[in-house]
Length: 128
Image (cartoon, rainbow, N blue to C red; front, top):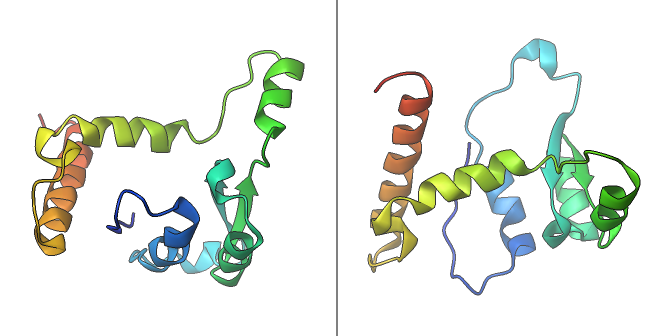
């Protein structure tokens, strides 16, 4: 997992490289031969993002603009693969302190994001 903080008016594709480079957990040596999969929505449908993903060892699964609408029409029961990310954003937005950024310092806001992520993981493991 990786967290990066930027302004609300920053486009997603501009933070892709920093976010992917921020992943701290080393992959097991047995899996290094295979590329990790990167599922993203049309906000990341840029050649720069695909190049960065390839350089960092990810296989990019990025839906092109309009491709998901066609898949919904043609494939019965089609669901997007990025629901895990959308669900996690929803869970983080339940922390009122994070929904509206009141902290002026990036370090303080990032610390709260880490705390919220740790709380979510702890709850998912049956901690509460």
